[in-house]
Length: 292
Image (cartoon, rainbow, N blue to C red; front, side, top):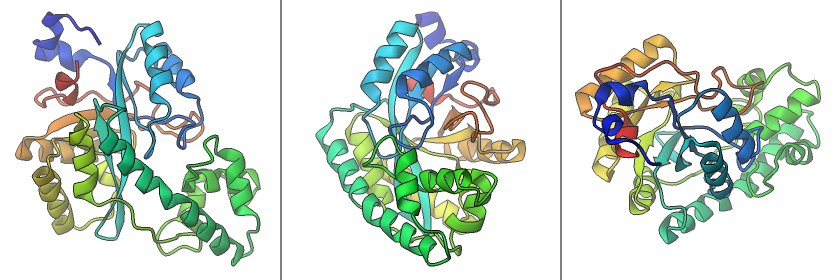
């Protein structure tokens, strides 16, 4: 993205940019094709967009071309699944080189376990009377190499088992429920290392979503910083105003760059549309100051 120096060096102008640095396409578990994501972002007044599909880089070239055609800034990104303290944590990489061999190999390793997990989830759901879930999930997954819990949830909604995706997760797909399957993702250090090695900035995604104790959150952030992580999503479509204020304080205390993101998947499922997040608190340093 070409940005006038007056904006790049003006904190107020940087904060005024409509940056949305975390969203998904059909390459992972979004509803829209990469080009459609960019077009929707443009229509919503987004100035700077990052596509960050789960453990996948396959939509970046199409999205980058569409962004160039649309005249909005584009940041190549990814969201990597990490296992930490019994939780699945997501680390976003921004400004990555999609052709970096280390990142490509790392993501291939992460995706390799998804097929086996999907089969185990289907078996677990069959055991409680929901047959054919894997075949149903595949009908909602445009990328057959990446079948996620969201695809299972969409199938269960379409089948009339539950009224919406959030309810499916609450009843079937979170820890302690019948369709939840333990899975070992990447380590925190590996994920951050792949991002940094690809020239990117590592960001803790939607930190309020994780069921971590205060001690575990401190340990997560300590290890994240020690591995080379630099930023945290303060504003997220998954955050309440109180959670935004809490993690704004974390960013200040730890000297972390602050990100702003809708985590948009689709109109039917996402509480916040592309580019419609709250603004960052004005005293925080936007992560996009390093990306434009």
